[in-house]
Image 1 (tube, rainbow, N blue to C red):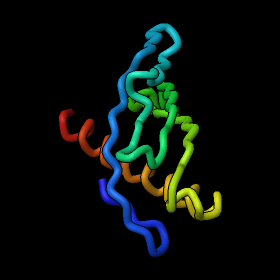
Image 2: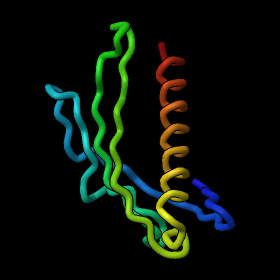
Image 3: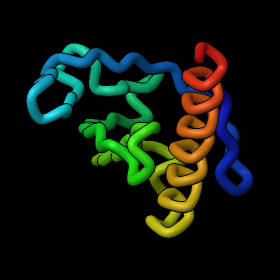
Image 4: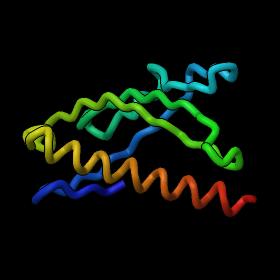
Length: 105
């Protein structure tokens, strides 16, 4: 994906491999083989997610927790700028995931 943060535009490639999955608690996390590693080691990210039944009983809410480490020129920006961009990316992902799941019926 291409990401612009302030005046810097970077291309990030990564993989997420769900190494741990617990169906009883409806949780999953990525593992060392995934780690969301970016091209040229611009950063890495650990992710954990959990599913919850929505209040209406018809939908499922997904809670995502990430721990990211940003390096290089991108890492020189303040945490507030990077966090705002990361939150936007996660929100876009959530919107796209919801649309894809809803389209499947």
